[in-house]
Length: 211
Image (cartoon, rainbow, N blue to C red):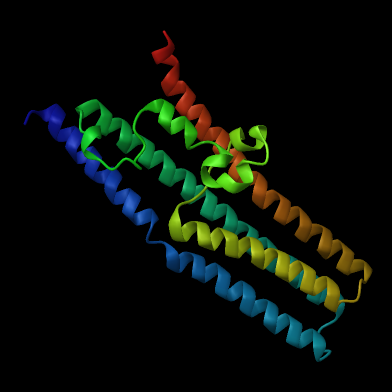
């Protein structure tokens, strides 16, 4: 084995190790989800027992919703990193001619990878509603990471609605409700933005093949 092959093998091993590491970050999600939900229960109990006023309750809820929003963004960022590493490993395997030995579900070829940047690839049922929606740029995390992303979204909606209903539509409650809605909306924009980044990456790899 010459130096070039040795370097390539070592790099491939590093990519695989990084890929496995991305799948083992469950405890970080729990470290975000647990304190956020526990903190909201504590705030709610304090507010119902008149130990804190409505302003403190709503502002505290906004902070916890923001924490869940950051957790959702972290999931998508890891999802992008995961797709990037998978793309790089797939390219390495294509170059050394071992793509025939991998599973069919594994992305092979640049044009196959372009499908992984589409909304419909990750959400086929919703993608069938409209062709433009199906082809929209999207990047979504795999497996358990995706479960936590959904949990962060549900958590934001739950905290926002519960705080609004409990606070009886006070002015500060409307402000907290508006911030919560913005966070939820941004949670769905982040996968689109990372999908655009991933699609640009794939298109740059495809461009030389057009010539």
